[in-house]
Length: 263
Image 1 (cartoon, rainbow, N blue to C red):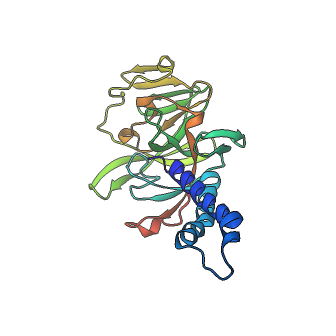
Image 2 (image 1 turned 135 degrees about the vertical axis):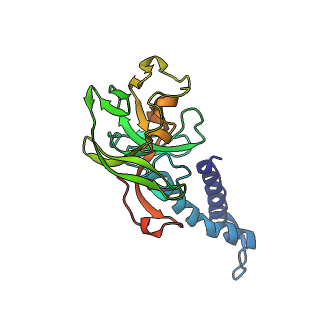
Image 3 (image 1 turned 60 degrees about the vertical axis):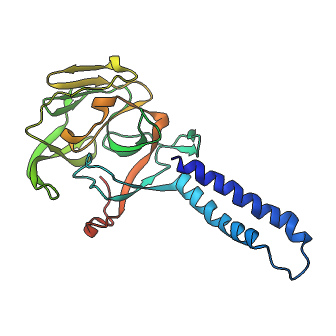
């Protein structure tokens, strides 16, 4: 469902009723006669819909985390906010960038439209930017031939299923975050999909090595052995970017997470 398109259509309808009443119908009504109920009802929603449309399209948009691919950074059930102008101003509905501001940086947590089905929104971490060579071999991440700094910390207990994963503190450029590894999961990629620029990737028994094409980004989940990400379906084109995740504003099952920033 294209919520932006639905909201835009509602905005057009309510705006048309509001302006028609202001410029035509109100002048024809006798003094003291109340507005028809349908005019009053629809026109009263116009400023509300306009405010929501502007906020959601250009400033901030809410999302809910549906899966565990970004554990431990994000939990299932987190409601997050996404900055819509971090990576440039885009026209709503058609999603065309009109003002360049910043570009995604390695380590950013980014929401984007899934390349194989743009009606779905995904969230992962930016690992490779255009021109980078990203290697994930034997569960060690390297960028442009340099191993990404990683140190072992306390194992992570999954509270829902009561099992432990190995947990690491990882640092890429200025971003520091935690990642998980399942010691029993193999390092190689099971059944990768054919995707645009497939030839930029080399798959082997140790994992995958990819060169990120221009205008694209390589994304990975922090729950490394339980995330279908760029290793499986390829690169995210710039036009699919939605925004940068920055804040957890609600979690019904774990209120302590409310108000947390996303790193």
